[in-house]
Length: 260
Image (cartoon, rainbow, N blue to C red; front, top):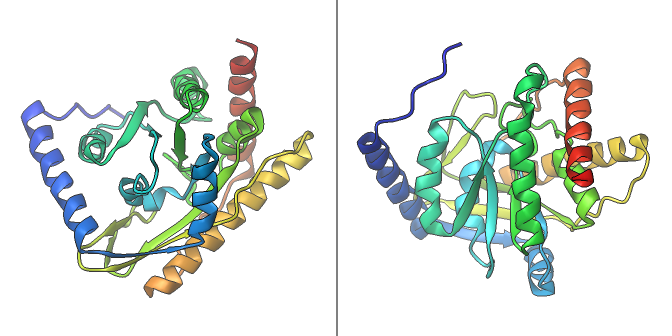
């Protein structure tokens, strides 16, 4: 499949400005309710970095997660051309981005660029930043947790703050992640779960940690959707071969990172 050409700079400027205005309109007209906010505040007040996790379909909510965080908030951006629009639109809200993509299990020769993204996130954590991750993105399967977030938490010893997010007025897209675009004049709910530390040593323990985090993120998102008046989003099936290949790539990439 041919790679799409980048947007013309002027078209990118117009699309980014329009998206920025939309984010601003949603932010100022939405009534925000934070559930479990003490979990977030406790981590912020500790003065130490941590990892924020939420599903890719709620990526638009990342624009509003910076509110209440006094320091840097850094996320990984894919190399897709449409990511340029989101980056340009969200940057004024205080969210920083590092470029990269997750390892593609079917394209091993391209996995190194994903590794550069992982390294950039680790550097941000070392510099004291909070990082945000969508552990089912950017390719899916939907709401199936890829191992990167658990591996990073294990390597750094830092906690994961799981978040569920939803809003009452949305447009849902028929994309792989069932992307939820927030609409103005709505009631939004952000649910902060208890911080999770990854302490497992064996492969079985780490696999269980991934499964537990996957279930936790889905449970929080389902609760947020229920509060906003939406049915839960169906989780996509996860092929075993896909999972095993993705795990092998992430294990090798992160082993190289820790030995470098």
